[in-house]
Structure formats: structure tokens, C-alpha cells
Image (tube, rainbow over the protein chains, first blue to last red):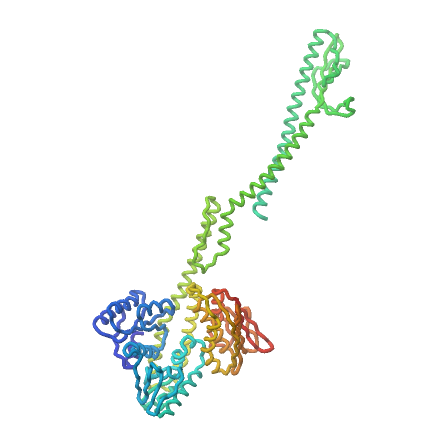
Length: 220
Length: 419
């Protein structure tokens, strides 16, 4: 689990240290400054909550994302009250984790006010608009979220299921209808191309989509 | 038959038998005593006669005013023994027969033997026996009344702990964590009963708690391997060397993984509901909530071109907001999932009732099983069969009665919730 998270995040251009127990985690945290930590609180010995408390006590400005097997509101609230930035319940999609980490990072270090640039796109997250050299791209909320999700995982394959889970959250369980995202992706693609962007989105054998500025992926 | 009736039946019938026996016994004893008394008095008369005869050498004059009747009769030869007997005698004054006691013996006066008979009526004993019967009957009646009244009040008082315990047991629910409030008593039998009830119920609750804990723990434990599989697949799918067939395998693996984790989450949710982990109750504005939900689901319905109508009026319910949210999710998504393309759905909210109607399969679902776990229509692989079971649990928890109806004419499935 630790390895695969590390693997994916490294591929996604994060720099990561791994710790598989509380003590080594504490050591890393004492020695280095991190932008964000991903904390699994499933393990019974030495609740991960203690680390959150200690980090907050040390006054470190570091984003915290808690991963837990427990999807209970109480745990979630405890985590967030202690100062965690986000809470993710197992099982989750790695692209989702990456997107959340990007979001935390943006919130923490740019007050969410940053302008994200991706290739020809300029994305203002606060005001939720997207601009290209040819002007604003009118996107619905879902399309905007979808775009942001793609940018957070650019050059990676994101599965249809992970997109559904990301866009519809809790209600995702309510549908197995993958056509739902097809419409959104089609629209997003069309709108971006209309404004003179290259077609960033390519389908991957029915598994999902890849968002990339490089054109060396063969669309399937 | 109530215990007290049975108990009374036994005590009272035994009492009546004992009384009757004692009356019979008393009758004979008293009769014997009276007879002996009479016999003695007759013997005294006999001695007086003897003395008179010895002194005067003639038979005494009989005083007819006395109760004893004395008669002398000449006989040929003297008897050698005196004889007591009970006889029926005609009493001329009263013109009727009376039972009397007679003593006959013989005396000799101037070589002439006489038979002397002294008789005395047994009048007194008869009256005595009547009186005794009356006294006994009255005593029995009084005793029965007293015992009945006493038993009734005693039973009420003595059996109070029993009824309290049984009433408590009646309200016992295995999923309820509250201990039973069993009464304290110093009656050994009830103590025994109550101790056993306490033991059994706490064993049952403990067993149930362990089972629930197991379910919850198991579900939690399953989450981590699921997360591992999911992350491994997410990594695998990044591989640029994947071909079409491999991707297909991956898609299938993803789908199975999704189903498994959905199933696990549903089971976990049921365990949590059973565990009373959703006991924070607040007043929910259902109109607001349903309106919000309809907005969320609009896109889903649209994607299947389902015509959704709704008619919402103000309604409130006191329940757990999380659970109500889940319940609405399940109902609304069913109305979409089990609907056909370009079908219809109708949502109606009134005070105390929510109805979700949707077109769908042209036959009724099995009404006896529809709310059971893992109930699903055949060849429906995508559904876990837990959705409605969760709805039912939530309804139970929130004091809602769920009903299902199928309208044959319009092929409409109707879910009605009332509270």
C-alpha cells in the first residue's frame, strides 16, 4: 500500500519519504519540512491522531491527509477537528489521492488563489474559470472539476470509475452508468478544442482516459 | 389457568375434605361422649333404685316428670347382665319416635325377678350435631373467603418481582445495549429466576455485541486489502505497454473490485446501524432535503431520459440526518437503476408520508422478500441486494413503516414510507 502510493506519487512528480511506523514517521517529520503528509490511521498501535496533534503542537505548516478504513463520521470529524485537511476512506483511487494532495497544497500555499497553468490553459481555481489564448472556456461545474482532476493527474491514466467517484462522491455508488461521464468528457473535449487547445484527452482501451499535453499517446 | 386459581383450587378442595372428615370424626366422638354421659347417669339411677329396693323391699314409685323413663316388668328368671342399647322409642307426649338410650338389667324382689329398663332420649345429640354442621359450614365459608382475599393480595405483592422481571424481559432487545432493570427480591425462587434472566440476557447481548464487532472489524479489515488491490490496479493501468485484451481484463477486475467494496461498505453500514452508531437524532426538514436530493439525482435520471415529476409539501421527521440521506439515496437510485430507458418516476412528499413511484419491470417484486438482505431479481448482477435491506433498517431505526406496492395496470413500483 505504502509502496504503491509512493510509486504513484513519485510518477506524479511528488517527492516522497515513506515511514511504515509511527516512530520513523516522527523521525522524518522532525528532520524535514514537508508540504503534506499522508497518514494512515488504521493501525491500532499509536493512533495516527497523535501525530496530527504533535504536528499541530510543533506549529508546522504542513498539510495532512488522513487515510482510514473507517468511514465513520466521528473519526472524520475528530481528524478534521485536530487540524487534518482531508480524510480519505479506503479503498480509494490513487488519482483521487493525487488530486486531493494537489488541492491541499494549493489551499495551504496559495490560499487557493493560485492560477494554475497547464500547457495552453490557465485555470483560476478560486473563481472557477478557464482561459486559453482564445478567451474563456465556459465550463459547467462538473466539467471544471473534471478538468482539475485531469490536470492533477496529468499524463496518468485515470479510470472511469475513479472519475465517477470523484465527480459524484457518495452518489457514485448509485450508478454503474459509465455513459454519464462520457457525456461530460465529450463536452469538455469539444469546448477545449473549440478554444484552440490541442485534444489533451485520449481514451485508454475502455479503462479510462489520459490527459496529456504531449501528443505521443495513441488514442485507442 | 392462572397460578392463583390453581393454587386456590388445591387449598380450598383440600380444606373442604379435611373439614368434612373432621366433622365426621367430631360427630362420632361427641356422640360417644354424650352416650357415655347418658349411660353414667342411667347407672346412677340404677344405683338409686337398688338402694331404694334394698331399704324398702319394694319397687320405687316412678316419677313421670323425670326425663328418664323407668319401667319394671316381671320375668320368669333373672338376667345376669346389664345391657345398654340405643333404641327408637315412641314418646307419647310428642307423638313421635325419638332415639333413646336404654339400660336394661334385672333385680330380684322377694324371689320375683324383675327386668328394669331405664331409658333416656338422645334429643341433645341431634341438636348438637345440627349446630356443629352449621358452625362448620360457616367456618369453611369464612375461611375460604379469607384465604381467597389473602391469597389475592399476597399474590399481587409476592409476585410483583416476577411480573416486573417478565415485563422487562418482554421489552428486551438483543441489540439494545441498555441493561435490563430487573427487580431485587429476597424470595429464593424469584431470585433464581431473575439471576438466570440476567445471566442469559447479558450472555445474549454479549454474544451479539461480539458478532457485531466481528462484522465491523471484518469489514474494516477487508478495506485495506481492497485499497491495496485498487492501488495496484491504478498503477498497472499506467503501463503504456498494455494492449486491448489486457485492458479488458483490467476493466473487469476494476468492476469486480468496485462491487466488492460497495458490498463491503453496505455490510459495514448495516453493522453500524445495528450497532446504534447513528443515534444522534435531529429534526429534519424533509422538503428541503428531498428537493436537494432531486437536484443531485437529476443528472442521473436525465442520463436515462427518465421523466421525473415531484409534488412536495412540508414534512418533518425526527431522525438521524445521515441515515435519512442514505435512505433517500437508495430509494432514488433504485428508481433510476431499476427503471427503463425513457421511463417515469414520481416523488410525492406529504406530512408523514413519502412515496417514490417508478416504472420498471413488468411484474411485482417478491413482496415477502423485497426488504431481505441479498434479495435480488435473477440475472441482476450489478445490484448487491442490500439497498432495500438498508432502507428497511433505517426505517426501523427511525420509526418509519416501509411499504411496497406494484400497480399492474401501469407497471409502476411504489415505495411508500409512513411515519
